[in-house]
Every structure is written in C-alpha cells, then in structure tokens.
Length: 267
Ligand code: SF4
Ligand code: SF4
Image 1 (cartoon, rainbow, N blue to C red):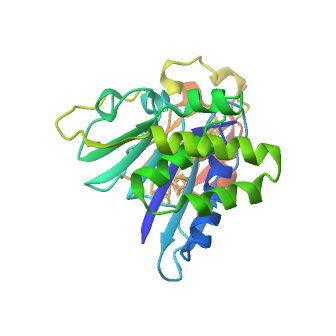
Image 2: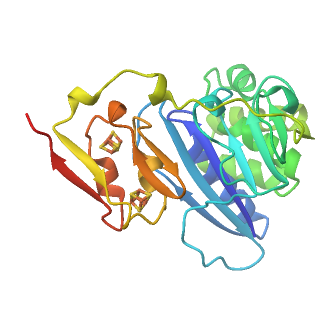
C-alpha cells in the first residue's frame, strides 16, 4: 500500500485533486481511499488531504502520519508548514516549484521531484489552481496512474470545456515534470510557521483552549485544523502558542478524545 499526503492552500484544489486522483487510480483497477480535510476553508490557509492506494481492500481509517510520498501544491508552503514531517526514509516529495528538486529548499533522506504547476495552471486555466497540473506530474514521476485514466477522471469531475483545459494542464505537466533527485546531502531550510511571524491575536480570545497532555494521543487533528497555525506537535503531544490563538474553538471540536478544554478567559 502507498500512503500519500497532499499539502496546499485553500483555493488550490488539494481536496479535489485527491478525489480526481483516487478516481483515476480506481479506473486503473486499484483500491483507493481519499481522506479530505475540511475545516480551515479559507483562501490561502494551509490545507491537507490524504490518499491511500493499494492492490487490495484498504481497512485503515486513520489519517496518514508516515507517508511514502508528499505532494505540495504551493512552492512556498514548505517554508511555513513542515511538509516532510513523518515522510518515510527514501520517500518522495513532488512539489510545485519552477526549478529542479535540489533548488527547492527541501533536504533530507528523500527525493524531490518538481513541476512548475503555477505557470502551467496560469497558461492553461488562467488561474493559479494547481491541482490538475500537479496530477499530471504525479503520473510522470510515479508511473502509478495512467494518463488515460487521469484524463477520464478529470472529465468526470469537470465535464465539458473546463475538463478539457484541465486535461491540457495535466498533459503539459506530464511533459515538463522534473524527475526525482536525491537531496540527502542538503540541509533543508528551517520551517517557520506563519503564526510565529504573524500578528498577536491573543486579545481576540474570550475562551482559551487548554490541552491535557495525559489525554492527548498525538493524532494531530488540532494541529491540522487550527486556522492560525497556533498548534505545534512536540514528542507526539500538541502544544498551543497562545500569542497566535484567537480562541475559535475549532481544535476543541476536532479533538476526538476530548483532550482540549475550552475555558473562559478572565476579563
Ligand atoms: S489534543 Fe486532541 S486533537 Fe490534538 S493531537 Fe492531542 S488528541 Fe489529537
Ligand atoms: S482555539 Fe486557538 S489553538 Fe484552537 S483552533 Fe482556534 S486558534 Fe487554533
């Protein structure tokens, strides 16, 4: 089984991209499981989505924590989101980037493939929606889905002219993708979560989330859903940076083991 994690920003189509790819792989006779992550539905905010592919029925239902592959739809996302977290040794990163894999700022025990998906999307769709271009590159660098099935899945998602221009994006990206290169001798750039460089929103808060570390099972749901990137993971426990927490309560709702309590601030 192959496990893949997609990273993008709201508006780039990461969730739809996973759905189209899962459909294409199904047409190729594979078993698939797509796990969309809704919640931070805000243009520009980091979003994730997950995909499992196998030759047999897939029974896992958990989020993907240790992917074989990471797909990144935004060239700058790797500076603020730890996109290679948990990536298996020898794994693969496919990133939307205008240059080759050794010039992306990513480094470690994995390989990096690239495609200039933003340019291709602008040339074909006229908008920076990079999902179909990245899928064309996925077909090229992994060889695990046929172009024929990918195009059929694109037309199923967008019948008519929109589907046709997306197919053009798929084909262009397939032709132009840069194959994976080793980056194990490169030290990756330091990831600076946006929240760390961002404004102080603590004064917005009426309630504050408090995590009970004993109850926290390290599932990362709060980390993924927090719209302010105020949550970090340390030794499989969630921690909140209160300067960047606006008290929206999303983490409280998303924690399935009720490890986060919502407590009213003193006024
Ligand atoms: S606090 Fe809850 S949602 Fe967050 S990592 Fe821990 S168990 Fe998961
Ligand atoms: S309450 Fe704070 S930590 Fe929780 S999701 Fe909202 S901003 Fe993030």
